[in-house]
Length: 398
Image (cartoon, rainbow, N blue to C red):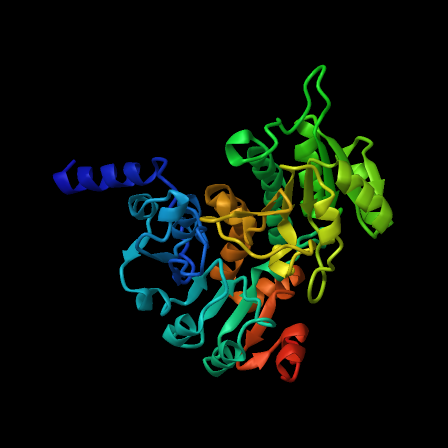
């Protein structure tokens, strides 16, 4: 057999041997630029996404830009974001030119001005209470603006609002416990209960998410808790969710005044669907409290539910009224930015992935709950409350 014949035979034998299956390599989804700017709002220490979320977005074929030192206040370094695959930018304009922009706080007029147009903005927009000029600029630039605080989950609740409420409720009790100590000019008592010592008395006004988690935290420490609310259904739900019996009452002024007189701590956790929170605790009630008692008004971002409440800052959080210590810091979750950022990312990352992978329109068709957060698109106002607040025509998309 000649050499060419031997070679041909070997080739034929080789073609019969098992081989690796040659599959088509799936093409990656269209790469998008996702921008995360540094928060510039007063007392805002959170960042829109944690480094682990950046890793997920990059793994899905997208490019992430983050402004330098955006996560510094939440203890996330530029190096962590860089290792996760993000591009670190020093010029905020580079961030606001991205296809999708994630922010925590509502955008300022200057930030909207930096946007190139025809982009997607995901943030706590609060456009109904923001200056009208911000809405006008978003419309002029045809920004698709989505308010993550109005996105609902499969159970019909607002997951971001609920999560931040859980943090604020728990934090309010931890803050109160610290303020009760003698080193904070408090009564010098421990928030809770111990064998042989009368437990601390806590009054929680409001049976929503904030009130529920303030009650949980106080009960966990061993305190005696009374909860007030005008809604019997909310009081009943709080009882069922906690799984134990607590003293509950409707907001009867005489009953409330009697409880506040005996309380060591009062937590203002009322929320108003529209407008200012009702003021239910008068100066006279505060004057009747024990010296060194603590009043924490979580409702201060809506005006507060104590007559003597006025906004304070994380740097100067307290003041004294009739020998009672008031704590009225708006944005209480900002005091624990690491926890708040992780909690925020847990809620927003699935929606972010859907929008980045499929586009906002298909993502909203797939998830009607996501569509409830759409505020503006293609120069039109798509959220009824925003349209009514600023006198624009309401133009629903879905």
